[in-house]
Image (tube, rainbow, N blue to C red; front, side, top):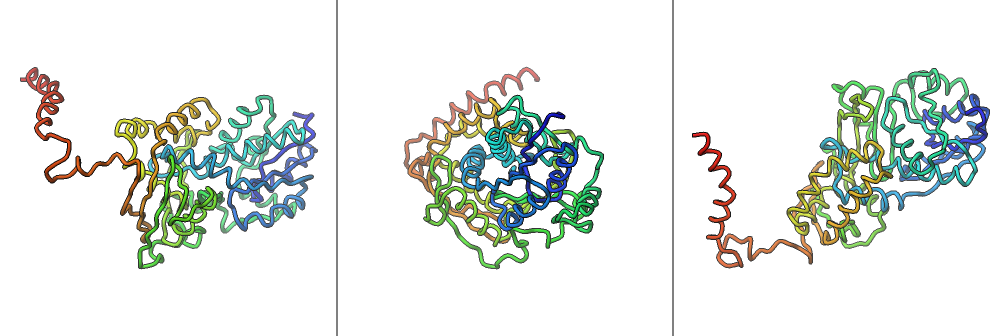
Length: 399
């Protein structure tokens, strides 16, 4: 890759990518264009442009992708009710294909033959970024510094940053890394690498602790249309604004903190701590909307595929044919998932207390324990005997 003249770097302004920006210039003697995706990092974005310029970027793109992120990536994933290994709502995973997609678009625009990222050789993000690069631009050249340089720890990166006077947001005392977007914020590394160590409460950003949450519960309502949330408390909101509003409500009530030891795609286990207040509310509300409107067999079939779908997102196969095929099936099932869900938020809990829909499949006249309804209880005897036939035959054979 000695002929590389220009590289587009996925740049966050954090420790890794700040060091990488300088390292690319020093190592490849090339022009580096920094690209930062605004996915809802908030105040973290304020110093990015000055920092990138100070470190040596020839140009900096800071693109507001918040609406596209929630509309075209988060909402499709939530229509599938996807979560990884029982608890991770995939906040980092789902952001990577969008960042990589826009990075390729900039590379084409700038006539850059190479792209780079800050993912380590031990993590999932290297796979997520690079699978997307190659799916969208098969001949792109990829520079992954963590797989090339001789620095092998964040402690060494901090020393490198100090040597080149690179401003960084971590210290030797708090070396854990964070990743923030509208869906979540994650924390990894440093003291968190000990799975017995409880996270420091002052580490959290989006939420108060459940102990410090209000003593009075708050009731909210979320409207859904074809599987997508469209309004909170009757107020229509764009996808990004809706998720931001749910983050405020959830964070206020200590909702969405998750502490996991998860299985990375590359084979090792890792410990991650996540804050996903709005996503946690949305996940529970969507399930409640489906409970009224989704046919039993369609629901059960979709649920059987959730672990597979979640793996596709976690592993980085967003732009793969199997994910697109499964998404089409999911979205077909979501056609009638419309209505309103009422929730009670209280000290870290999201409690469903009501749901209604014009497309409900719930019929109180049939379900009632009182007399009436188009259902003959005597019919259940034949239903049971037919379904018990194989069990009776098995028992007879064993006698």
